[in-house]
Image (tube, rainbow over all chains, first blue to last red; front, side):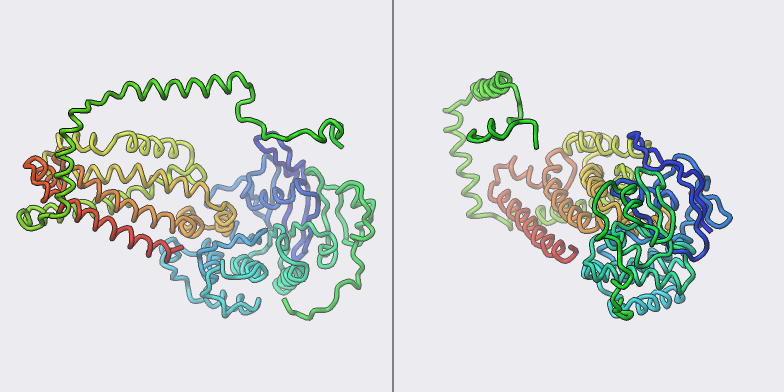
Amino acid sequence: MLRLNKLTKTYKTGDQALMAVTLEIPEGQVLALIGPSGAGKSTLIRCINRLVEPTSGTVHLGDVELTGLSSGALRRERRRMGMIFQEYALVERLTVMENVLSGRLGYVGFWRSFLRRFPQSDVDEAFRLLDRVGLAHMADKRADELSGGQRQRVGICRALIQNPALLLVDEPTASLDPKTSRQIMRLICELCRERGLAAIINIHDVALAQMFVQRVIGLRAGAMEFDGPPDGLTPDVLTTIYGAEDWEATIANVDDDEDEGTAA
Amino acid sequence: MSDAPLDTLIGKPWKRPPFVKRAWLRYTLLGGFFLYLVAAYMTIDVNWSRVYEGLERGKKFVLAFTSPDFTTRARDIQSGMIESIVMTVAASVVGIAISIPIALGAARNVAPLPVYLICRAIIAVSRALQEIIVAILLVAIFGFGPLAGFLTLSFATIGFLSKLLAEDIESMDRTQAEAIKASGARWTQWINYGVQPQVMPRLIGLSIYRVDINFRESAILGLVGAGGIGATLNTSFDRYEYDTAAAILLIIIAIVMALEYISGIVRARVQ
């Protein structure tokens, strides 16, 4: 469904952020991307929707090759890739509803969006999504009035209303407390399952990743060091990705996931 | 831990590293600047007997404020004021409307390099030419009257507003704008959703401030024949009618204070 072939990014400063990453993700697979800061995790997902232009290599989303697209065609393809950000990246002075509806900008014309006259079906879908994450009553609040967990749930709605085939998720839990982090991760994974979405989730927290995903990719200095199931992350593997440390305490025990129902 | 052994550091006072490292250069610069200041002040040459005579005239002028004359030239004051306000409003609206696209072009994170350079050049020209100079040129082209004043103020508004707005756009939060771009928004939608909400309070604040400046400028532009209350003010000075001049100045002060008050309220509301 998503195929990266020898994807490489060299920044103008000469920093090699990605070194020929080759990767294939089947329909509906949720994948965690782990690695130390500066390993190129953020660059990798931004090279997929070309918020960062890759230096070489190809990206196929379905049958479409993304790296060679004109800006108009790129915009159409970006609609199929929902993105969820570190620190939420909501437009703070817009309302929750405007933030969610901004996920439809690729589908509506300028004047409609300028006058905030979105099609009724979009507004209905926005309310359905907000209700799904428990925020329907917040629709008219300004985004900066929300708490961190609430903001990230609005961010999730904004990505999903695009009706994407793929979610690109950049450190979704970076500034959230441990409990909210789990709720957000669980919510993202549930929604992916419900809708059959594939997802790439950049994440710092190895234990949290192991808890929720089917596959883990380890990135170190722009190169893939590990690709396998979550329980394949042995202390040795973590040492090759992150460097030497005592990893025993980090690796999750499976029964660690206490049941909180669907509180998210 | 570090390369300097701790023993050599303990017991020694600590001082912030100076901005200019070489001591002789530091003191030469300071001393040179001080000498220049002294020399500069010595070139100002004051004619004390002229000051003494002038004090009398100054006193008359100040005393006129205790008995401002709104009535004798009421008609002139009224028409001058109306002309000034019309010039201010018209020039501010046109100037702000032109400033916004130029500000977008002059923000490096929004515009491509060629557009950026052109817009920065426009701003530089507008800022380099002081209002009075522009007004003299435009009066020469369009003749005496408020048209020249209106054009002058519009032109000056562009330099002021575009520059400050562009700087605000350049310092906006990138990720908020990036999130809008990632949804597949076109450029205009990206500006409308990702950029505009972030800079709106600043734009409104600057606009009100510019209306304020334009009004005050319109009182000056009359001195070179570009219409407005300045012409009336100039005439009253020429006739030594300090009481009428005082009345005009008081009205200007009142209007500027009212604008200041309004801008405070509006800015608090849009934050």
